[in-house]
Image 1: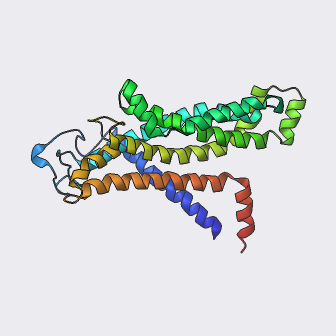
Image 2: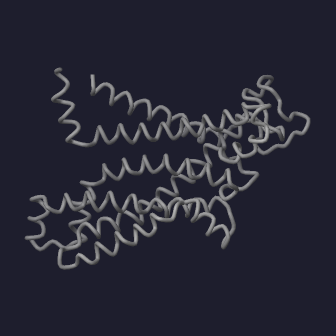
Image 3: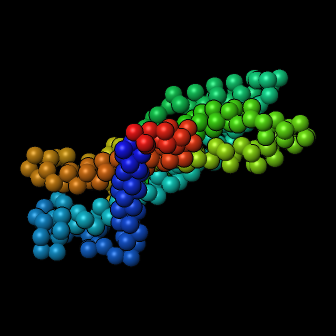
Length: 283
């Protein structure tokens, strides 16, 4: 029963993520209406009559905005997590592979990571926005840089475990150099952990992008964004709550989907958890 429950989480997370990805892909070729078209005569239009979820205070179709907003959210998440993985993984692997005679290198890398970790994505976005201007690029860089320490820590801890295995010790005894060991032995064995970390970080990136757009430091109009949809709906929260309901629900389901997907992948890819499930299954 435990195994089935874990598989259910993986399937549920994959299904929720699949819906978000499908909406984003479909928005490239079709949306019910132009998501940026302002129709003063149709503002606050109720659901129905070609507007499945109604229209906002500017007369823009809510469903179309949600679909294009999914595209924006995934775009920011993919680039931000990509930045974090490309920068954080090599740093973590280098720190984990550093010999004891060069322990200062590992400590230096991790202390710099701690320093970066002290600056949340919002603060970095404010700083970058003041210099370069707020926008999607600013949000991607801020979220990516703020997520680097998470990848570095996971990569370092996993690398240290791999470096004491017999096959790595044999490779070092055979004279294989550090870069070759990292590419041939370390990265293939820590790849599953990095995939899980990427899934969890994606959920964090979705929340960060929505928060930045809500505060005006993320995606700029007229490009639809779930966070800005929430910001634009707050003055009508009590009179027209559906304007906040749909983007809030989209953010919640997307974050839930990526979190469930990350937990499911962790349970599926971790050999210790697989063996534990195998022992519990007969019960």
